[in-house]
Amino acid sequence: MKVMAFVGSPRKHSNTDLLIDKVIEGARSKIEIEVEKIYLYDADIKYCTACGKHTILEGKKPCPLKDDMEGILKRMEKADAFIFGSPNHGRTISAAMTNFIARMMPLLDMQVVYGDKGEIKDAWVDSKVKGKKVISVISQGDPLPSSSALVMKILDDNFKDFQMKKVGEVFSMSNLRVGQVKEKKTDLDWAFLMGVRLASFLQYETV
Image 1: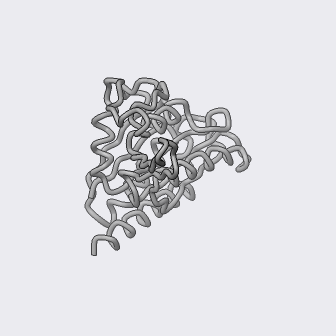
Image 2: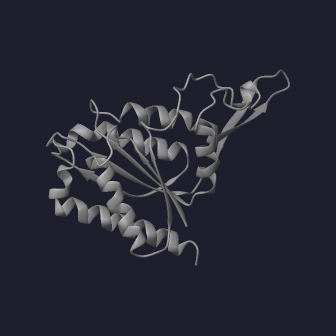
């Protein structure tokens, strides 16, 4: 089993990073998995220019940006599950996570039906990661749960757009210091449990 974890925090060993590690630990307690963890702020991922070259309207051309993303997308197609982790930055996902999701668009394959006059009569999208399992991990400094409402919605909506199956989420509040979540047994235990849950979904679907 291959799991890819995307860390949307600019700091290693951040609260987001630690919670992701706990999810991985939980999954590994049940099944054998290969994990690739990608720190989005360290990876060479250029800013999306919304050129649309990958769409059928532009001839489904390769992304013109040459960086790490081409390889990441190929590995995502072969992976079994994902962990998307982001801190709450200004009540939304981090800048690196925003750009990463935008650069994931080549995973969507647009299909178009044209009429006799060249007009678009119908259109739909197939996803190259359809049905793959995903866990979201969110950390915030604010003590109010509502502060991350948009963070959760953005991640959830994008999971749906890419036709992935969300099987769990981790949400931790009041993390004002780097690594503060290490003091929160309840949050760490929940992250571990979400890893166990992820493993159960992967295990069940391969039986």
